[in-house]
Length: 454
Image (cartoon, rainbow, N blue to C red; front, side):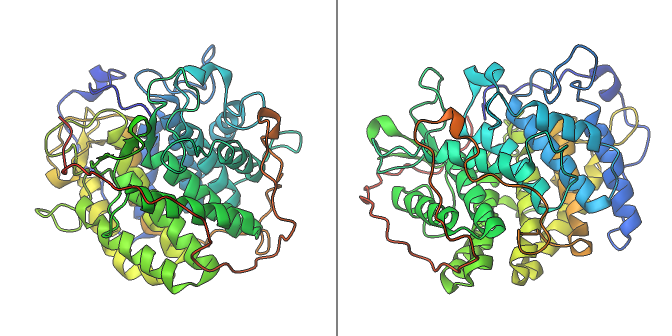
């Protein structure tokens, strides 16, 4: 993703900037109907920013200032919306977008995004497709690429980008050398790969994916992108062999590794992965305000009013992946659900802006005093944290052996690669312990101090 723009969204400003005349969204977490109604209202507000279904516009794209990755994230939220509520209002535009943006090789690398395409951007679309497979979202027509195959294509195109030339491995942020940030190995790109690999391993039963997840975890740990307290940092510069770390912390980094680690525990039942999952959960405490206990906030940019367009959506993903974690590691629910419940109530109160009094703001710690912020990210974050409170009402993610219907393709994405990944022949659900033997040069980290967005 591209963290380059820090202004407020201009779309619909005349509507949204008027004084609030209606109360905030009503939310009773003891009522399934109340949660669904709140989610419906917020989803409608989020989709109101979407223009890709209009004549002459491009399906799947959000208008400026939103980057392509956030559109993929939004459609992932709409897959979740269907999963939690059963409401198929947005299924047509979601399916259209997820198929239209696959690119010529069906790997979420559309040619019109080349100038800004990062591994994390591609991965957010891949994770949306993977979620669709896991929750049995309606499959595409038979003559179209299928959800599982699309996720496998993203994995395959990224696995061959593993870069041993610097830092002992890892993925670069950007895919193409001509894009700014090509020399940055960022935590979210590597975390998305870890997340996808773990979930594909669970879904398909092929341990090649799990081995890649182990390899990625080991590299991230060795290079210092996470510390012993399971705090995840932003990234590192490979022009200096990753010897300095950008120590800023974002909520979505913790979230993407949390679900990956919990999935690895689900497959292996390993004490090591249980410890790692719990460690990440403990580390997420930095994203819950000390002034408003159990209320989620973006610690690096909310207090100083510096959240840009991308960062305004980050709480959506921590909420999404915390809820999903309770399904693959049920023992985490007692820790996670009180945080999602309190945050959901706070988010609903903050959905009190604009002329309709139901536009969602950014700072859930503000209560019903709308902070004047609005946009896709704000709506998506409120939607995910509120609908996540239905997680106990829905089935967990399926696999090939437990009712999954999405068709896979282990060779998906190889048309765009010179050296496609070769998966192991064994496709049973063999359990894999932690600690695959992957050799790394443990690089000394010169480490900087914690810093906030300037």
